[in-house]
Length: 276
Ligand code: NAP
Image (tube, rainbow, N blue to C red; front, side, top):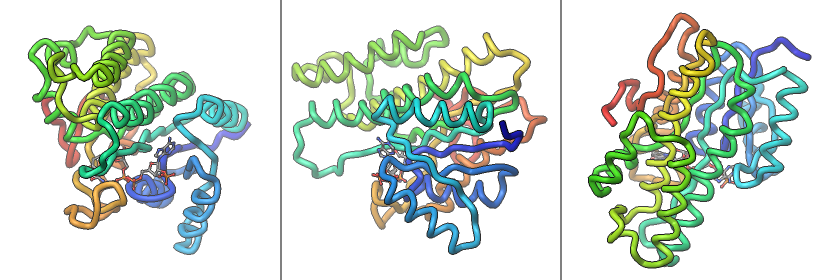
């Protein structure tokens, strides 16, 4: 088993994820894994970085596929005995003008952005080593969507005692409510992406709390962040930040020095803790 440190970035064959891998290859003292659900797209991205003189490694990972997540888990356990940096970046968003029925958009978006990300956390968080760093790429849209929720939902999502099971039930309820056409009546905002990212931010707060309670002394720091509005296939060419600029906050959180004890369990944008 190798003593080399290891970083993994999900959904990193393009966009912000690829820029995060590029920055980690330059700054992280260890192996950096570019992962992609499609091996061809992943290998092409690795080749692109190799042409820049960088040396990322590759592993397949589809966060919608539990077998794929577990294969990566077993690989990391065998080869490295764990994991030092995990960046949960993979995500999807329907375009604003997409005519797919809202209930389908809700189910598909929540499946990847919330349930997929959660499955990665379930399998990989137990592997994270002392002084590990976990970064969940959420969005400022999670904050605006939170403000669009009923007072009752806002209270639950801001609660310091909400459990992972309660959060999972609420996310599943949103999908069911959209299918029954009652999501607005039930206090939800009209954004599947926004609700999925509420899920990512609240899951981060819960996981950080559990790390503090159960793994005190391991100095692991876990945060959610917004990369900003970034020119990628998701956000389009009019966005204000380059992918490299979008990678700055996630990379800052991934490389928090071992002497740091904060931020932890926060929502961070432009390297600054934002109120939730
Ligand atoms: P992007 O260019 O569309 O890239 C998304 C990446 O996620 C791609 O590599 C994609 O792979 C991957 N992915 C999607 N579903 C996956 C799955 N099931 N398993 C593994 N990988 C999967 O988008 P981006 O703008 O870089 O977004 C990266 C993250 O930043 C997302 O979480 C997004 O919500 C968040 N974000 C973006 C912005 C923005 O302005 N761009 C703002 C706030 C937050 P494929 O190539 O195979 O599709």
